[in-house]
Image 1: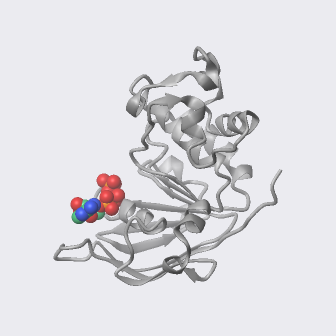
Image 2: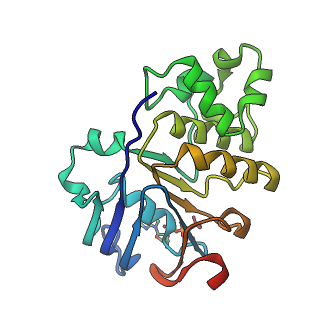
Image 3: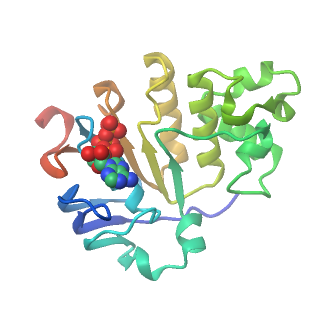
Length: 231
Ligand code: ATP
């Protein structure tokens, strides 16, 4: 298999204001997600968690400060190079009409079937895909409407894992999973992301108990940080 790649993601004095908006959504964000570590981000709805995540693949650019990958400003990286290093599972992950395999290969067209099954196993999706008629070739309806919310989420997670990224961003990506599945998935993720920087946006406290650091976001600012025991 491929050599492990490592990366470090840093927010240095990051602020962000949506185009045309009166007030900034994010202010003075300073933190680093290190390779092999999980950084959790919690905060009430509207506190800016998704906005923060979306600055990494440059869906928007910071309007103050810098987002850095291994010390390099993301604005200086070729978009394809930047994206190849990121595995993003958005809050509303989108499955398109096609097969399970074509959805999983979205970011890595040359992934083998064995690699797809490996990612499905980690994402706790192997059993249900094995039960689908056609398995990897089973049809997915536009938007994944022939699957449950939890099944869609697990396929979206598997799709990100197939990429073997250095930076994983899970934006509320475990919300539709029951607590037992959530726990199994996070246990399986550990070795898979051993060399990756992992950011987990979560609502459920149980999803972040094992994080190396937790940031508490409120109105776009970090109002608390530390390990779970300290917060
Ligand atoms: P949730 O937990 O509900 O997903 P969040 O913490 O992820 O919330 P964001 O989705 O980042 O919060 O939203 C932060 C703020 O930015 C909200 O006030 C939202 O209305 C605003 N916002 C989000 N997207 C845009 C946009 N494209 N244009 C303008 N404002 C936006």
